[in-house]
Length: 622
Image (cartoon, rainbow, N blue to C red; front, side):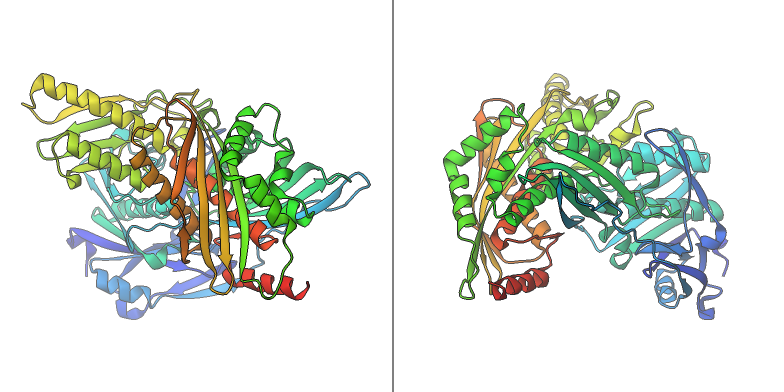
C-alpha cells in the first residue's frame, strides 16, 4: 500500500512506561509491515528551543530511546487506517536495557550545631487532573505556503515561534485553530508534542495528518509532581531561623528551568513570614521534549508547603499552630493582621485551635478528630507581571448573526467563569448559550517577552470581556446590526498596581472509621470588594472549594455545613481570582488535617491507607 495515494493518514503514539531504561530496539509485527509505518528515535529528530529568560539554546530530541520518565513516546505509528494502528500499537515489542536510576537524593547538609537544631520534613504535590475527554485529536496539514493546525492549544505565540524556528515557516503562515473544549493546561505537553509529531509526518508525506492520543497516552502529564525535602533550622528557643529547601520535579524543565526557578523565588520573597528560604530546584535530566506549562502547580505547591511546614513544626513542638505562625508575620504585613482579626472575631479560630492543641490525646474510643485550617495569600500582580511587556496583547470579539466568537490570549481554567461569561454574553446579544465561543488566539501583535504568555490569570480576561461587551453594545446601537461580522478589540491591560489579599479559615471533622469529612465555617475574607453579583460569586467560590477538596483527597465523601462564606472588609474593586482562592483552599484544608491528625500529611492527593496506618500507630503508642 502506498500512503502517497491517500489524502490523509492517522498517527498514534507508542508509550514506554519503564523509566530508567534504554530502548535497544523495537519491533512491529510483520503482519503490519506494508500497512503501518513509523517515525522514532532512530530518525534522530532534533529541535531547537531557546531559554525564555537568557536566550540560551537547547537542542532537544522529539524522540529519545533513553526513557527518563513515565509515559515517554519513543515512536509514533502512522497509517491510513486507525483500527490497524490500534492493533499494531498493542503488538510493538521493546528491547530494554536498565540503566542507573537518575533519582537524586536529598543533598542538603543535615549537621546540627550549637546554635541551631534541625527539623526535617518531606512533602509531595501532584498535579490537579481534569480531563474533558478520553482522547486528544490534533490535525495538521499544509495548504499552499500555510501550515494549518487544529488543536486544543495554549501559548500560541510561543508555539508559533518554536515551529517557525525549527521548520523554517514564517509565523504569519502558521494558522492555529484552537479547539474550544475547555480542557485545562495539564494536557498541554501532550498536545504540543502531538503538533510537532504531526508536522514532521505531514512534511514527510505531504498529507493531512490526524494525530490521536488516548487516555492511556496521558501518563507523560498526569504523573507530574513536585517533591519538597526540607531542613528547618531552629534556635534553642524553637524560633525558625531559615529553611533549606530542595525541590524536585519529576519531569525535565530544560529551556523553562530559569523561568520556574525565578517564579519560585518571587513567591517566597513575597510571602508574609520573616524567614530566610534557600531553594535548590532539581529537574529530571533528559534530552526529550517536555513543555511544562504549569506554573499553577508551582504556586499551589509553594503555598501549601509553607502552611504545612509551619503546622508540622508547631505540632512537633507541641505548640498551637496559629499562634506559632503569627510569630513570623513581617511587620509591614498590616493587611494580614486586619484580615486575621476579622476572621477571628467571626469564627474564634484562635480559641478553637488552642482547644484542639490542648486536647490532642489519642484514645482508641475516639471516633472523630478536629482541626482548624488557615491560609493567607497575597496576589500581587508585580509577582506575575513585573518586567513583562504585555502591552501588545489583545482580546477581540467577532459578532455574527448567529454566534459570537471571543478570542482570548490563554485558557480560562475557571469553568464557572466561562459559564458565567457565556450566559452574560448570550443574554446581551440575544444568542443561545452554545453560540458563544471562547477561542484561544495569537493575540500578540509584535514580538514579546514569551514568559508573559506562561503567566495566566482568569480575572484579567473577565474584566476585559465585560468591558468589551459594553463597547460592542454601543457599536451595535450605532450601526443597527446591518453588516456582520461586527468586530471590536482592545489591549489586554494588566493593572500593575492590582493586589488581591485573601485569607481562608475552616474547621474539619474527620470521622475515623468511615473517613467521612465534614467542613464547617469555611470563610474567605477579602480586603477590597463589593457585594454586587454576590450570588454568582458565592456559587463560584463554593465550586472552587469543592475542586480544592477533590485535589487534596481525590474521590472521597465530604459535607460542607452552612455553605461557604465570602466577605469583604473594605469597599473596592472585587478581583476574583480562581487561582488564589483555589490555592488558599488547598493550603487551609491541608493545614487543618495536620492539626487533626497531629502528624505530617505529606502527600497531595492524600494517601488514605498511609494516614490510617499512621493514626493506628499513634493510638498504640499512647
